[in-house]
Length: 203
Image (tube, rainbow, N blue to C red; front, side, top):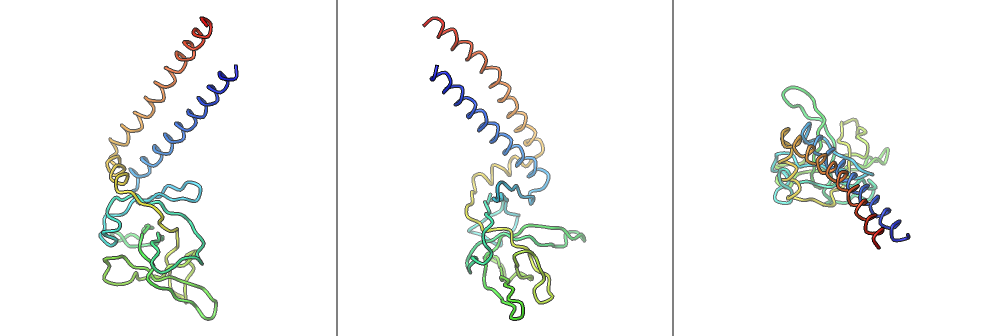
């Protein structure tokens, strides 16, 4: 009896884990198909893909998947790789984008004590135009970029995999495959339970 209950609990746990992963992947694929720059945030951790620039090569290249974690702004140091939110003009329209660069220095406002960081890409010819602050508050009257988090992991393999699924057709195929697997699982599970009951009856 206890073994049977244990199997049921494990089955429920496996199903919850499978469903969670399936929903997470489906959400990420959909968001990447709609907008590659749109992040997916899960419990304070953000998932981004690197935009088609060479500013962070060879450390980070186009389509790399990066995992960004929100940390205490006061703990940031020169050399940290950070992601920040900024606005740039694209085809005449101001758009919000996410950029990942290194911290190259910092500034402190004597009057207010406000701290802001200087950022730049590895291959950039100069520093980013705006400083980065914790919440995007203006620094000495100048516009600033908004700190998002520190990059603590990256994957080229998963980045390229997600880039493949960025195609609308590939995204649709992936979602359909997930639902087909779920249906197969639901169809096979009752049969397995029935067989287990028959085995117990024979025993």
